[in-house]
Amino acid sequence: MGNFGGNYGFYAFAPDGTLMWDSVNGATTRGIGNDTITTVKIVNETITTVKVADNAITNSVQYVDDTTLSVTTSETAAASLVFDLNTNDQVLMWAMGTGANTGTSALTIRIRLDSVGGGEIAYGQYGGAGKSTVATQAVYTHTGAPGVRAFVFTMHNGGGSDIVALDHRKFIGIRRQK
Image 1: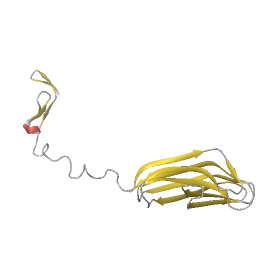
Image 2 (image 1 turned 90 degrees about the horizontal axis):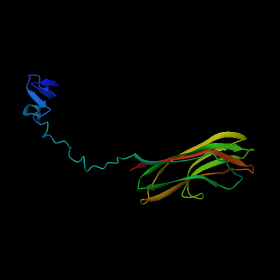
Image 3 (image 1 turned 45 degrees about the horizontal axis):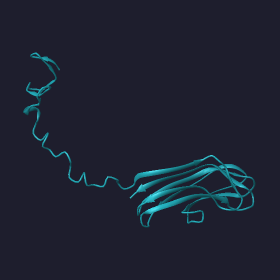
Image 4 (image 1 turned 60 degrees about the vertical axis):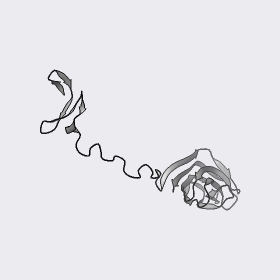
C-alpha cells in the first residue's frame, strides 16, 4: 500500500515478487490460482436440504401472571398455551407457581390437553399449610394430523374443603419440530 511508480493504491505480491492484485486492474493471472474460482462453491444438495433440522426449536411461548387464583374444590384454568403442530412434533412444558394452603388440603396442578377437562399429561401436588413452590413438567408428542393444539395448566383442591391458592404462575412451552 502506498506510492508505486507515481500510482497510489494497494498491491499484493506473491512471495516470489510476482504481482497478484492491484487496486487498478484487480486480480492478475498469478493472483487467480488453480481451482480458486472454478471450484464449486455450493456443495451438492445444500440448497435442497431441509433447513429445519430434527429437534430444532421452532417456537416457544411463555405465560406469566402474578395475580392470585383461589379455589375450593373445582378445577380451574391457571394458564394456557397454543401451538400449531406437525405430526411427531414435540412440546416440552413447565408449569409452576407459588402454592398456598389455609389448612391441610392439597393444591394439585396439572397440564391437560385442550381444556380443563382434557386428558392429563402431567401432575404435581403440594400438601400442608403455608406456601411452597409447586411445579410439574411434560413432554407431549403430537401423533395426530397437523393442526392447532392447546395445553392448559390447571389447579384445584386435591382433597379437603380448605381454600388453596396459586400465584406467580408460569407456564412455558417449547416446540421441537420433527
